Amino acid sequence: MEYDIAVIGGGPAGITASIACSTDLDVVLLEKNPSLAKKLLLTGGGRCNITNNKPPKKLLSHYDSKNFLKTSFYTFTNDDLHSLFEFDFIEENNNRIFPESEKSVDVLKGLEKHLKDVDILLNYEVKEIKDNFIINNEIKADKIIMATGGVTYPQTGCDKSNYFLVKHPLTDIKYGLSPLITKEDLSSIAGITLHNVAVSYKKNKIDGDVLISHSGLTGPGIIDLSSIISKDLKYNILDGTENFSFKIAIDLTPDYSYEELKSKFSEDFQKKGTTLVKNYLKKFLAKGFIEYFLNKSSIDPNIQLNKINKKSRNRLIESLKRLTFEITAFNEKLAKVTVGGIDIKNVNPKTMESKIIPNLYFAGEILDLDGPTGGYNLKIAFSTGYLAGLSASNKIF
Ligand SMILES: Cc1cc2nc3c(=O)[nH]c(=O)nc-3n(C[C@H](O)[C@H](O)[C@H](O)COP(=O)(O)OP(=O)(O)OC[C@H]3O[C@@H](n4cnc5c(N)ncnc54)[C@H](O)[C@@H]3O)c2cc1C
Image 1 (cartoon, rainbow, N blue to C red):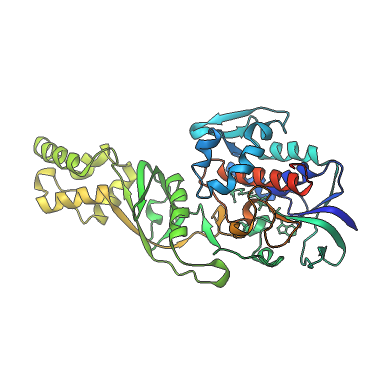
Image 2 (image 1 turned 45 degrees about the vertical axis):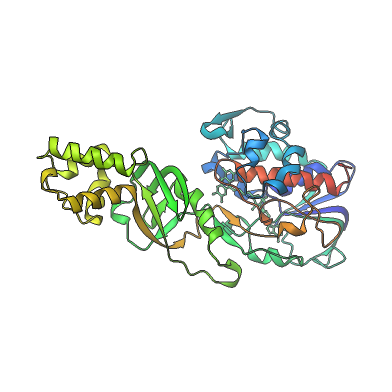
């Protein structure tokens, strides 16, 4: 079988690449699963946070690789993405965009409508690509677009071996947007949400809710911080150098400074001297969390405010402002994206073509590109996919 272009991987990046290049050319889309875009169906809890509606410049500022992404974002805008669908979208907080039906399957169906000119081979796993672009000894393509995704959620089709289908330099492969596993067993308080707190790692601080799970900490604040932490740590999933031990801190009262807490406590502890500390803290902390918090801070939950000495009061303030947790691992089963991938130094950002192997293109999560939660990662997949498809079919020149 001979094709002008073979697109490998039928996720959002591979699908948009196929859409962009299919008119007038023979294009094949190779997908190892029995259906397309298994991961897309899981996105946004099944609702698909398809993109983020911030204006392009502001949107780009949320990515470490903004310069690389610029051409693709301006070539395939959110308006271009919307125009692929016959239905409307809704916008939620922080400019997150969802299909109006709130069903990711509708996004997939909408995309599939544009694939009529594409030969789609399902249950087709690419295991070998020869230098002359012969795939699995049976398909010959003039050009190849690699869109095989990252390593997380392997049940959706991702696999480490994809990085080695072509010889191309890689950056370290790491977990991104991941819950964190704590050394301490938090199962007794699992299910509690700490609202409007700030989580920090070294000098990085993120505002957002934290959810306590059976294995540790999760929720928007933790998930976004995890990618920052991952980038700071030296390890690589591909060579098994995953040995973590680091600390994060939660500011449970970000609206108060240390000084403000100090003066508030000295005033309140006098005024409400006979109040038990566990009752007093109800205005600062989630109900089910107070007892745990006080035990962790070595303060008797049943002590009256006027019996708390200065040292304990300072310890209480320190715990409210910096409750620390030792982290032993990322939750590899629940990490949403891969940090790292094909080194973008060797990829032309204006075309997505390899600077090393002519006629080879990359799109989506296989590249060393990632963003925070909020539609930023699908945005990468759609825009780089579309640009790769356009350039592979010479439509942008
Ligand atoms: C649970 C979850 C929720 C998420 N929610 C959001 C969200 O709401 N918003 C957002 O922006 N991002 C979200 N993401 C991230 C987003 O889904 C990914 O960044 C995006 O799917 C990447 O697209 P991709 O096409 O590059 O890769 P993928 O979606 O991983 O697609 C790659 C495809 O290639 C196929 N493939 C792999 N190897 C081969 C091979 N050798 N031969 C043939 N086919 C192969 C795979 O089967 C797969 O279908 C979420 C991720 C997860 C896991």
